[in-house]
Length: 384
Image 1: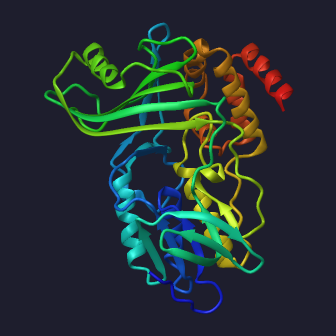
Image 2: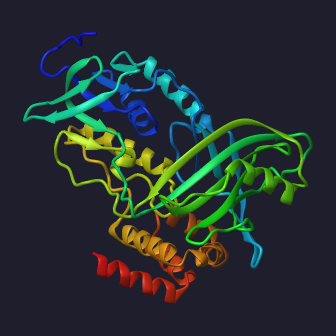
Image 3: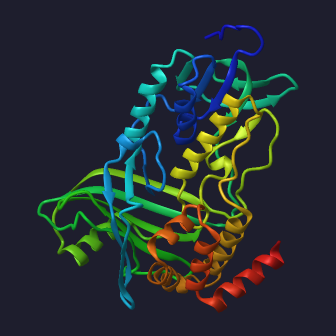
């Protein structure tokens, strides 16, 4: 379908990819009736394909999409027992993707200046002095500014957070709805990797369980569905259950995967913009902060540039932490257990979301095993 040219470029803004990052930015721009915005998304329809979780540290436009909330959580393993922590100020939240997509589509549909095209992929992007040309499945379009959320390749040597999750309903009550299990290391481990079970109970009979691995990209892992079934049997007495939803993913834990410096017309966002925290995989809040910053730049008439999701100090600490996990994965459970045991909840939450103050960072550093981290810091310094 031909795109009408209304003087200059076809659009003021083109967003490549209508996932979380692209839709989050589009929602902000929906308040700007003066902007012509194109969003291209290769999938033909939206469905629940994933689940985002985060601590609610600041507000965002998708509050109504939250399906679960916890003010208590635990980290545990067989040797060290369970550490129970919590925060009323920063609750932990579960946000199903379909609710985010639906909320964003309603907002975008009500904005006359936004053109959301499903089933349309973006190809080559060429930047010129006055505009950007984008090859799409429907022909070439031009825009003044392009925000590209297509993820870049990760380093093949980096760790990967691999997970399979199932939202299940059991035939009898067996979950404690007020308490989330962020990491339970009391599951069979494998050399060269760190494995844990993640449990978010939504009711006494409904929960999201994820079999999660921090492992090299090529490491084969056992059947995760069987692992979830076995975990239910060992921890909850083998109740019968049915699967309501299943998701699977692989998040690169690459400390070098950062947004490139850019002052041009093409700006990376989302994973491409460095929104995923390498040491944890958390991205939802960073994506929201990025969208807020870019929308503010456009409103002020500034060249849009994504705010750095994390400081140099945070990037260094991620690199050191991941080096320690990669070199001595068998010590991973002890490191995580110590962090949650020795740190107060709110400083640790801010650290895990790249919002830590110097005092927060000092508290986190004091909670980590000193010799392991010093050795990892030396390896990172030599590599860089």
